[in-house]
Image (tube, rainbow, N blue to C red; front, top):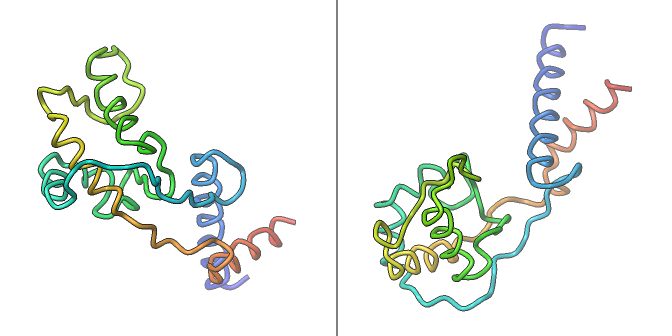
Length: 153
């Protein structure tokens, strides 16, 4: 095996492992399915929400478009299915103040993030659209994953 083929194999194994971990984190053994954005009504102002998204540092974990960073949500809307679900998620943990938080997201009480501002942020993040291709269209990734599977056998 040449040095280049060893490097390609190593990259393939890393990508395969990363793909498996990502799929596992998203709730399954296979490729994650992209979930369309919610269609429930919103009552905030997206322009104001954009400024607040940056003011409150949401981009630090969720990225500039909701798809990057440590906690992306576009395509995995979870607590963002409705405006009320979002507010409940923000407030529930802040009001209870658990010793061991269920997530690493900061607590946002109504006094630290007023409902109007939270609704503006929610309206802004609902404007995010996925730019990720379906895994079946990721030719290079699929070639690497197939090569890794063949080497494994």
